[in-house]
Length: 364
Ligand code: SAM
Ligand code: DTB
Ligand code: SF4
Image 1 (cartoon, helix red, strand yellow):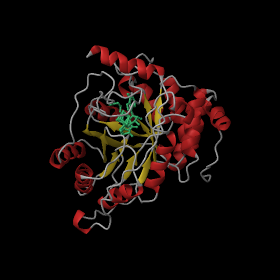
Image 2: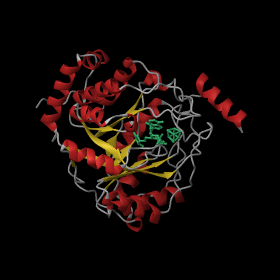
Image 3: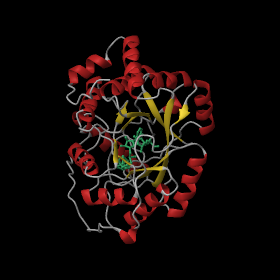
Image 4: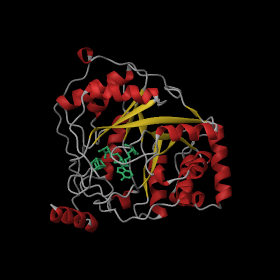
């Protein structure tokens, strides 16, 4: 078992990505077995606690208010609603709940206090709790950690170069800063990205350089295949082929041997054979549940049948790291600082984002 390498270069990663497939699969599966039980897969359930109406212009996202998509928006869910959903997820075999909010960044105040209460509630159900709430300050990360958060998801989404072709309202460096803020706590980092947005293979490698040179590397890395949603700037993107997905998973596994690689959005487009190949290539986590945040995901029962067929077991909660303690709000050592951080807003023009925005205006 070699020591984890933190100085991967783009050329080295490209060489791995472009290997003959059988060789790539063999190498990835070998690394996988050295670090993980190849028959165990972690199962997370996504829960969109605040849906739609987002101020950002992320070209892939159906929740951006400026595009005309067919999703149903919702204000922040109540703690009771979240608890009921978490119990359902636990019953269906999930070890983790990942709560997503269509926010640019976390704002101190009542809504964040409510999210902290959701974290406490789910941790007390003995499930791993993950949040993905946008950019985060150090104090906000510490408050989440104190509430019992297990993981924070904040994706780099693409290479730094291609990020600029997809999003103009926030910067890549703020994503890195947020990950750094999470690293100042004992919360684990979940960060990955999307393939199929029109990026080059070099951009995929660039994203893996950015992730694998973090020290420590993220504990989990979601690999999403773009779900091209009508009304978004990326609505016409062709689906990525299973071969690209397998190559991306295998390369991620090789450059980040200890991480849990998550087969994320896009599984409805994959056959069970395709997914099996991804598991062989080192994927050892999935998002389960009939819905991702706003788009469909395979039926949970079908997923469990696939696990049976392949002889896969669901990973128990807190297998990789002990359960964090929950500190009640009344005993908290951190305060609502009422921070107003100045996250960047590059504001350059992205033609296809502008076109989708204009089309949405015309549709109104
Ligand atoms: N608003 C927060 C943020 O952007 O960090 C959290 C929620 S956001 C929806 C979380 C992630 O979902 C994005 O970073 C992106 O990787 C993924 N995502 C969003 N829309 C997607 C799509 N259409 N296809 C694949 N992944 C998508
Ligand atoms: C991640 O990498 N993928 C998840 C989760 N982290 C938050 C989200 C996928 C969203 C797909 C589009 C949708 O359902 O809205
Ligand atoms: Fe908002 Fe997150 Fe969607 Fe971007 S990805 S539009 S920040 S919800």
